[in-house]
Amino acid sequence: MRFRPRTPTTLLALTAAAALVAGPLAGAATATSPGGAAAPTSVGAGSRAKARVHNSGIATWFGPGFYGNKTACGQTLTPNVVGVANRTLPCGTLVKVGYAGHTLILPVLDRGPYSHIGADWDLTAGAAEALGITETVRIATRVVGSAPNTPTLGLPAVAQSATRSGGALAG
Image (cartoon, rainbow, N blue to C red):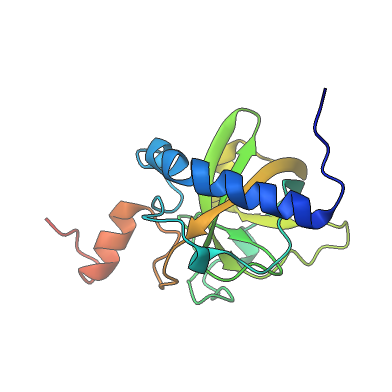
C-alpha cells in the first residue's frame, strides 16, 4: 500500500521532516564531493524557506553568455561557479539536486529561470556539467539547509581561498 498525501500542507510537512532527519546525513555524504556548496552545519527552523518546495522539476542551464555578470545574490558568474537559480527560494538556500545517479548540493545564487517552457530551476554551467546535464531535463530536488550568502558562494574551495588571499593561493 502506498501513502499519498492529500494536501500540499501535508506534503510540505513530510518534506520538512525528511530534510530534518536526512539533512545532517546528506551533508556528511557530500562534504567530500567536488564542487557545489559546503555541507550545511545545521538544519534548523530558521533555515526553512517560506517558498514552494518542489520534489522534482524541469531544469535548464545557463552560463557562457552571462559570465562576468553579477547574479541576483551578488556573485560574479564564471565557469567555476556551481549553483542554481530559483524564482522564490532565498539566496543561500541549499538544494540537493539529483539527476541520472548524480547528486550535488547547490546554493541558490540567482533568480530565474526566465525561459518560457515552464522550468523551475536554472543550473549554472558548472552545476550542469557536474551533474552530466546537457539539455533541459527533469531533476529531483530537496531543500536541505542554508548557507551565508557571500560573494564567493558557489565557488570551489580552491577558488574561494584564492579570492580571500587576493588572487594568490594561500598556503
